Every structure is written in structure tokens, then in C-alpha cells.
Length: 308
Image (cartoon, rainbow, N blue to C red; front, side, top):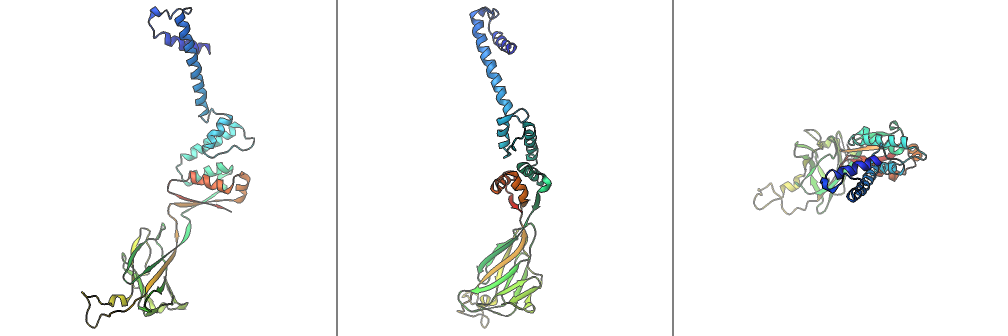
């Protein structure tokens, strides 16, 4: 300690002119410089002690616990510093993985004090999607599969509002020009369900009356434009474009309620399955595990914790 203090004092003294007699250890100026040098040396040692508490390799006890808390890693009961330090360092290495499957499994395994092989990750988990819209004849909308792949929807039609009937209702993907439609009269109160290869009207098979000449319309991941079509609205006369013996006037036409349902795989998402035994042995609650999962997942990624 004395050597360090003498060095600090000497470095200060060397910066002063010789006539200050800093070379004389008995001089007043030297004693003042030495007192300052000793105080600075002591402060430097305090700074070094603080720095050591911020490094995983040199922190101990409660200081190491605080570093582990940054990664939501708690010390197991009676776990020595050396073992706990290795778990924290492992977490640091996993965080460098950037939210990959292996890093997520490794970090969660450290959090639960379990083996990574006990956990299972499923990317782009499946889900059921349904969208419903009320539209009139000729009205369009935009829709995508909300999935990582295209989907073949089940299309359900019912009628609501003024009027009682429409003719030859159908749904068209305007981007691909694929259309599926029912040939015939469709009335309020009926329920038409069309899917790839099958169709029912109020539960009865009407596949022979439903056509999709260019293939059943599909939902692409990136979205597409869709339209509802029926023949009565198309024939309603307008003052500037009606045609004799082809247009009709003052006919109420009901709106269509179109429900499209399909199965898809969630984009930018994964589910992590954790055995209930592992969660119970870890001492962590399901909410704590779910909160930790939301910390380690990548930004913009949807994560689901499944405990089985």
C-alpha cells in the first residue's frame, strides 16, 4: 500500500518546480502533497473495488447476485459462487445468440435450472383465423393469410338487410381472378358454405351448383384484393348507364355477411413448451417464466409459453 501511495505522491511532486522543495520529505509542501497523494491512492483502490463488483469473473456474494438479477437468474439455495458464476456467464453467452432458438432454450434452461433438452420450441405455431365482413354487391376489401404460407379458406355466406334474394353470389380474388360462386337463387336465412372440393347450402350438399373454374381462391401471405359479386346489383339501373330491357329499378338487395376461416402458421412467432415438473422443481411461477421469456425473445417476435 505504501509503495502505491509513495508513487502517487511522487507523480504529483514531479510536476512542481524544484524551489518548492518537494524533494525534501520533511518540508511542509511535501507533507501536504503526500497527504493528498495518500487520499487519491485510497480513492483509486475504492474505484477498483467497485469495478470488480461489476465483472462476473471477480464479483462475489451479493454483488454476483445483483449481476445475475440483470438476466433474471436467481441463485439456487446453497449454490456456491463458482457454480452460480458459470451459470451467469452461460447466460451472457446465450444472450449473444440474438434470440435464436438455441439461445432461447439455453437461457430458459438456466432460468429454470434445467437441461435444455427438457424444453421444446415450435416455430410458427399453427392457429385458426377467421375474418367476417358485411359487404354489398361489387364491394371490395383487402385480406391476407396472416400466416407464413398461403391458405385455402372456408367461405361462408349469409344475407342481411333489405331485400330477400340475390342471384349467383360469389367471391373473387381480384389479384388472381380466381372466383368461387353458387349458381342459383340465394335467399335471406340460408347459409352457404364453400370450401375447396365441397359446398353445402343449409347443410345439404350443393357441390354440383358451385364452381371455381380457375381454381378455388387462395389467401396469399402478402395480402390480396377481394370482391363480393352477385347479379342483381349489377343490373340495377343508373341514370347515366342504364340499358333498355337489361336494367331493373328500385329493387332492394340484401348485403352479404362473408365469413372466411382458415388454418395458418403465425409469422414471427414461436411457442416454448416446458414440462410442469421442470417448472415446479425450479421454484419459479408460470408468470415469472413467461415474463423471462418475453425478456429474452427477439424484438417484434411473439412468444408463447406452454406448460404441460
